[in-house]
Length: 487
Ligand code: ADP
Ligand code: F6P
Image (cartoon, rainbow, N blue to C red):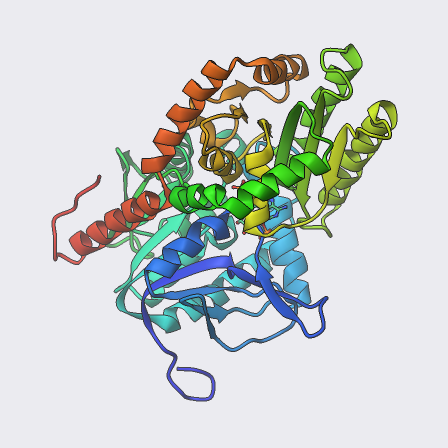
């Protein structure tokens, strides 16, 4: 029921994520909707367009209520957040507590009880909103670290639902996770799901180990038996395993073959002065992405004379992200200082060493950049997957180009023919960048062909079909309509 007493429209498939696929942009007059940042939206939007369903999420504006609306074949159900909740739930607990804790403590996580209180409150609101739009027996798919309490809240309210959870970011080892004062509440929250998906097998193993140590529950392979709140009966069996996320390979491949994108890629190179080697970095401006390390390595290569000024240009595209959080301001200052220094030393009137853009671009423009770049630099210090690495490969329609890929990105487990790097090792990173720049054509093609072959089958369609097929099988088994099958 809606507040005025009318019934909400209900759906057999419901996605719940912190953000809707579009954000309200209040800086334009009149305000407009624009694509939300990040890999979650890139991956989940095509899944939603194929399964008519509802997407429950925040519309990116503060203290504003929006009615549900339809967009590109999706029914969007906005959840309002107040300015205090943005500070405590989103910028605070989600992005200054959980984000650094789950990314190897690259910066120090902060623990504040008021932030936790708002995290609980907002998770309750998301669960309540989703419970209202889910049809009886619907499949509900909860996404990411901002909403870890939603599975158990939904299980309490709606035991008829098939509940899945997917964590887009890493899940830390017990030695780090143990710091979280609310660790058992988070584990219990996640265990409300029938299926809990992670990017890597190691993340799923970290989660199961935390459940064994912290909740004193036994696990058998992927399965964890969850008792009811009073501990009397078995509530259900939750399964935790890896489902590495991917991209819409076919769509990007098709886009990168379009004449206008090919022409734009040529134009980009010419606007950059037709450098011999064009290197590219594309990231949200986040301290986990290793942007500073990459720029440092590039600067040292110029300084050593290993790369001559005029030989190579680095284009760094950085999407603005979480700009009110102190560590994000700091990384922006650091990156911009480093870019300024290198350009001051090595740029000439007709050649700029580093081009830095602090913008978001439309998908077509991103495809043109990927197509234009000879070497893609993905140097994340820790990353759940990193879709940018996969997008670059999907756009290399001539089987050329070299992907330099951090071993700390989930994507390294699938893209095994990339030039892998440890971004903390600046000398090693320099050597691997040089190897990429100097790599013979035949080797480039051999590596790229193998990675493209992999992504043709391991695409986002397979990811969602695998996850949702497994989830529905497990839920049917729980309800006694089918035997439990774990793929
Ligand atoms: P994360 O989810 O941490 O942001 P991913 O690499 O997994 O990292 O996903 C980032 C997504 O955002 C990709 O789909 C990428 O194409 C997109 N993206 C990154 N930078 C930009 C930008 N400047 N403009 C538009 N899209 C961008
Ligand atoms: O998984 C990465 C992720 O954190 C998503 O959860 C999120 O939507 C995206 O990156 C962008 O971050 P934000 O929503 O904080 O702008």
